[in-house]
Length: 70
Image (cartoon, rainbow, N blue to C red):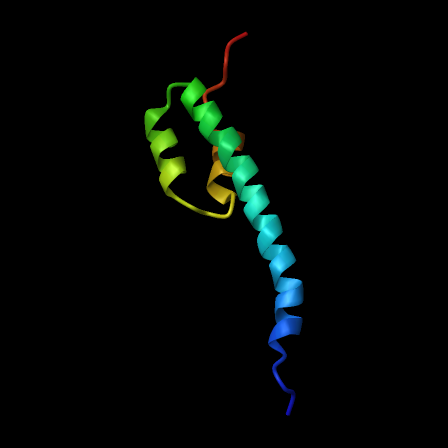
């Protein structure tokens, strides 16, 4: 039977967690900024409260933000 090696497990898991955390911070910051700039208070609150590893902020940026007139 294989022995569980916790250090080996963490050696590949920590970079993945770090990458997802950095992605979440960047995407969430952009989404919050766009929601605030577009005066979408409900989206701003929802994005600030819900943690979704970047999925919800990315969906907001791609599909739900108000299109700005130039």
